[in-house]
Image (cartoon, rainbow, N blue to C red):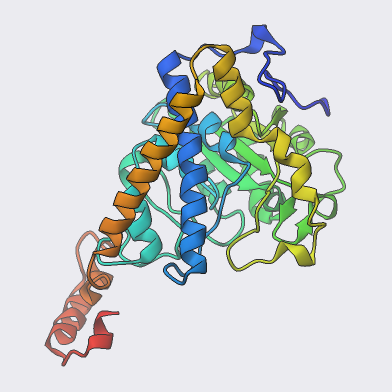
Length: 365
């Protein structure tokens, strides 16, 4: 076990370790860059909307975008993603639409999960992107359960589960790692160590020197990687996936990054951290760093970068306009849908009573 943080690129986009540079097709490199830029621009736009009163709640990922795509890119479509609430890029990578994303934030009549979740708590069954939960760490043992099922069914699917460093203080984390270690399950524990669990600093979260070190007690390898460097994340993910698919079991990855924004649109970080602290991380920005690498590869120009910004901005504007035009909220009858495969008689009776009851405008909201 080492305290060293693994990286392929330096902050200026130079390759430090050519032997560890993952082989990624140029079109995929550009797609990853575009995805990271999409997350950044979407965050900026949605946070402004929240401040304008057009959204009730939002959470940004500024400075952490590399964790979304470094984690999701190496996966197969049949693999599972159990996100925390700060990895929308992993869903975008798999095909989650911008309009769907915004409708979920608004909880309107075309919200894909029918207003049953908080904003930013997405669930996308068709891409194996499992419902986000607010309770800290609950997704960790759930991912282990899916990995266990894959092993029982003799499939080589892998479950990737994201969580913040605060999640390592939960009982769910310890139970999950212990079970995965004992049964050698194909799961990757991805700890996004961004320095702050809401207002709790990393130093107040654990007495261990690193979060990766916690893997040792459960018989797992623990890896520390630069969470602001997408190629390094892809590299360690490739190793973890090979281990998982080969039957050797789980890996704990600690991605060292930083939460440059507030925990959420309801949070004021100035009351618990030095306002100058985020500035120290600006030069480590994952998008700028990856852009400089692409420039050195001859894959990115100032003109292309501007073109991508305008293109993405236009797509967000169009999706927002369409989502805001959706009338009303999910029909109240939808509370009976998607709960049971066969709706039991007592709920059918309640649904009938509801349908016959007098309606008011508030009934639909």
